[in-house]
Image 1 (tube, rainbow, N blue to C red):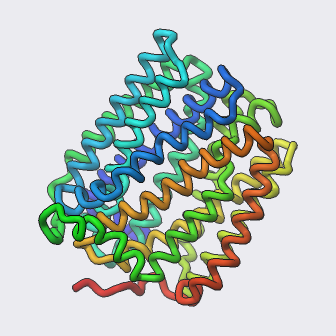
Image 2: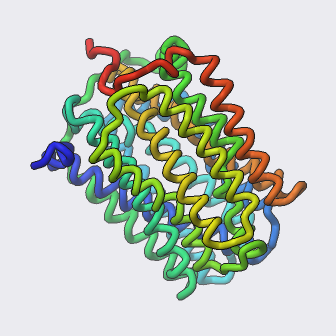
Length: 408
């Protein structure tokens, strides 16, 4: 098999990859459907903020336990059980939709439970990849992991918009069925080898992930860069506002807007597969974060559909490059015995940047309007890239992605 597909030489990775794709596909179908239905019923942008907030808070509250669970117990089992819980949440939302009880309070309650499932799944899933793919194939696996998410980010929102156009019940039932398939695939993976760190449930052990991130400045710089750039510059939460009120595209159009960043990201994944990043990885990381912010500014100002779509494609493309670099740096600079806890810390940063960023965007838009919120956020992301380049010179000067902390 070509070295461009080295990770797929391993059957366990094939199942893991497919499961992650199906999970991400389902989450995107669910997200676009719930966001549209709530905003269409209420025209309240603040509720879009609450959707992000209730999914982030469980990861924050449980961070000391989700990463420890990934390090202490079978990452495969935790990932599979988390997907099962997500499926139950999808079925609960399906019940609300078909019985006419789709009320914001009930939906937000279910999404809180959904956030608990995601809080446990994220560190387990990120850490499991390193246990089923040899070190020499891991960079290749990272690229395909990212591509599975981005492909799901293209197909999921588009499918969600189309399925919701048929009926909300069809959209939510499709999400539930694909989540069931994803869980079965994970449970079919043979038990992988996993380094078990310190035992016990002491606070010292639980805080190991935070201590390692603080000590290793390359890791701290990489994940905090994503935190603040996307927290301030993310525009995804306000796409229902643009689709309904500014571009007037409807739910199907919302699906295609949500898919546009994924299209740009997939184009970059293909490019990286053919032309890998061989040098100056840190400098490329900061440049791409700044261009992510600039693309967001263009989208925020646009009232022309094709310009908006092109801008969102650029948002996804530049974000994909930075995600690719950050993920490799994070996983290869982290020892296996603390990788789950470090990934739990990373999931807090990612949750803060994504779900908490959605809350920030929704609440700001309710007060100052969607256009101001998106444009100001794009400029803020550019500023973050500039400031972080000065604060973390070691990250900026990082050159080769295959270098990392040697395994003990």
